[in-house]
Image (tube, rainbow, N blue to C red; front, side, top):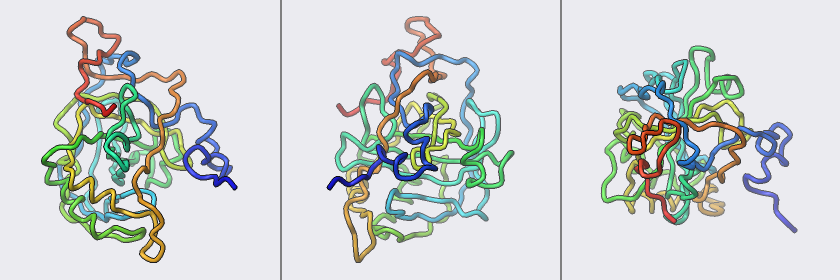
Length: 280
């Protein structure tokens, strides 16, 4: 008997998730440098630098850090955004091995993990639940990971708690974390209109994929791979490989603020400008 599980079946499991199978603005995507369009109007993304508090949780589907509602709002603006967005949560997607784990890919190459920073348009909507299915509702900032000998102090505030959330439902509170402190030092990015990467795949997300990675150590990625999908009594299987595969681009444009000076062509993006080096 076949078991109907996984992203390919989301649209079949629940009628409210039909966009997961039928939608034509789905995420993630594979970013091909040859189709990127240079947009001189894309300014730098601004993420407020003050610190916030929140709760780290093993949801059984991902590692989630959700900012406390009464914590100071951390706002995102600039880039392709016409509104300001309040950061709601951070999600971690990662693989069982170093050659897979990210949701977005570059020229077909995946990365060991991807951090997604999700925020909602608080100029139009009161909270994430209201904004999720609505126009201009959500922003997603995607940062791909590469393995290194050192990671950022703010990322370590999260990874140092992983041993306390091995099983589904376990939580740890984290104080004084800077979301901006986790980000790589870059003003360059790619952007497109897409969807949430979990059911119901709402096509309301402006995605911003940063053009530099953040770094995670082998020890930290090992701790991630020890996390389980189930609770202590029924741990089930590893939480790793919790990524959705790339979806068809259809006729969407993917814009960038990286200018190809080498060939003097402001219409496209040269692969030599990518800071990423994917795992084949």
